[in-house]
Image (cartoon, rainbow, N blue to C red; front, side, top):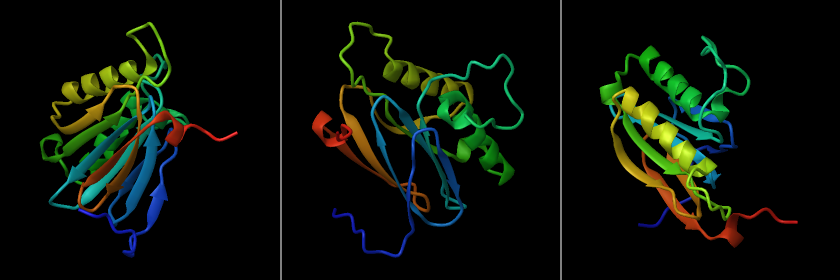
Length: 170
């Protein structure tokens, strides 16, 4: 299948620490290394959301009732905010399609507890606690990923990247 960029959908680039919730059709593009993206989608309302979390867990002693300025950097906070937004539209957790991506170990490390693996663990733990099943996942390993998420269909196109593809230029 060839992905066409000629359609009239608005395109949004999702930066690290950001989250998008859409009622309108859009194409959301993001690039992941050790970060994790979770997509959530409800077929009935054609309602989609994606986050780009950089860190596993918020260190705040008490969870906020309102998201703080850095909330979407943390996988636990981003997922909770997405679920709260879905609930406000009457969408139950059982009616949400969930996909997860990223969590690469992009730096050589002798530790098995890298930031990428921590991001994956907290994401899976949070989803499990909320009784959400994952219908698709591409996580871990040592390569980055480019995602294109369509908010009105829940489709995700993924390209695996080698280090030279997503390394910042001098």
